[in-house]
Image 1 (cartoon, rainbow, N blue to C red):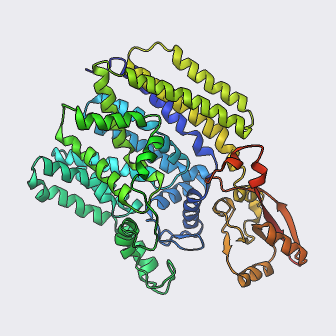
Image 2: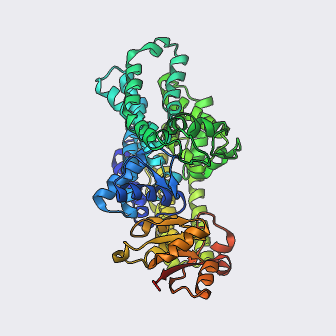
Image 3: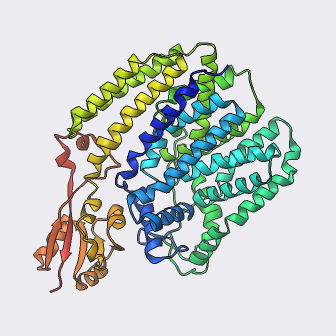
Length: 549
């Protein structure tokens, strides 16, 4: 049966979930990856060059073009700002919410679809991905959208779904590479094998869709060919004669998986198991229960659902076996995780067996309040008492709500936990951290009217300086280039204390514009979090205005 109360509170909880994701849009872009990608898109706009990607001081080959094109289009409309960089990713995240609903509706029912959307909307690392934007919001939306349109193709609906599926597949490929075909198509292959639908492998619709996908990625292939294959003299990854097209089809994905490409990593097969437990909060325990339920107790084994179960399983295994592992990779699994968790909650709700899960959700809420209060006290956050009071009021309100059923209690207490976490993170925690992103603080002091003056980094590098500075920023890595830059004064220089002191003692006509404190804010340490010891781990950075002699 359906939850009779869900239609009433679904739109309100969804509105709250979307609202909780919005404050991060206005915060500064955090280093390193987000600021680097934002700078690559900035270079596109400043030079009106939509083919050649340039970042980190050299031709950029590591990631495909699609996310950078989206950010650059946003810059064209709204200006080069942090908000403009994050906005298109946020829109794609909204698209992924819609397609998660459509998948849930067509594979389960409307109620499970609504619960899945509510779960996905506040899943921890999904919300973080809307603040620290990389490729995942784009990739997730394209994958889940492609899956739903493929479901429509399978049901022989209008031919427009073939084109739509191909377009989303192409955008996913142009976001992360050819490996996404495994995530998108793996579940379908398992479904056809399990149900012995071998004729589907010869169905012309799928081959037309795949052919269109490769036609739609031609802009990416053309750009790679022009930037790299036509210029074998370019030094990429420390060598020449690098083919951009080969890298796109092989080294960028298969090379990482087998750890044979130019970019290598170290992997542990259990990494994503324990990462999921915190990345999918406040629903991770429910996800574990959902997986166990599917394996042991699910009596409604609709084989068509293998298009998401199989995709989730194959992708998780690939991530776990890969040697290149980062927590945000999991985000593309969240729509499928949400559907699995929603199905589990809904099945138990129908037989009123959610008591244990209500207790777990309540415990997580209390633990969250305790941790947030402890962090606020230890970090010495300004207006910390207000933050604690807000968190306490949210928890108290969640206990005084009159709940009609256990499912409603789980969802609202999960949202209470999310509200505590995201209000704390985006209103209090990250604003404090970003004060120590020295490149951003230095960029604030470069007047826009001086954007024609050269700006460089030497001795210390900051992606946030490169993005927030009015124009281009040079990365200087050798002494001769540095001396040539100094000779072109007036100019601005971002550097460390040793280089700044050396220049001043050498008699260079340099004015110290700022000495922002610096800390690598994505590598948190106890000494930094503790307000009493924070000063001991901070390093000064210098913004110098070098005048002409």
